[in-house]
Length: 114
Image (cartoon, rainbow, N blue to C red; front, side, top):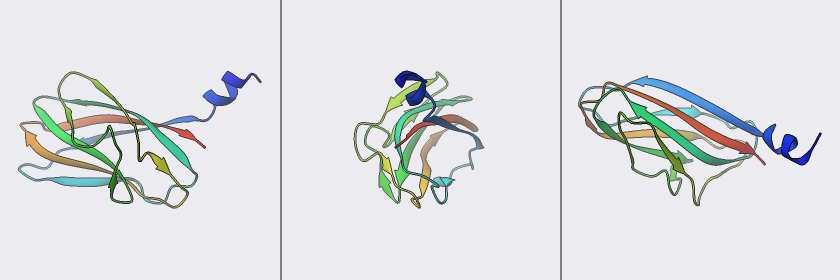
């Protein structure tokens, strides 16, 4: 197996699709107890309409580059730049705030095992 193939085998993605509660800031847990260490690398987001602010947190700390990013009806990609290391046992959450007529949010969080 080549080095590129070994690296590719460490990349995983967690996809989610949620109904956004009306007039309410909310959050949900993507990983309650991370089974392995990984780096959070990319976040892909899209709403059905309107926009909503989204943050990815590890144990309550914002991932830099994924803190209060705006999800819209056009797919967007966000790259983590710091505070993006998950250790085994950490909790990863998605926060949603400032909803502007969005009803649904779709996303994928791409991570790489360390």
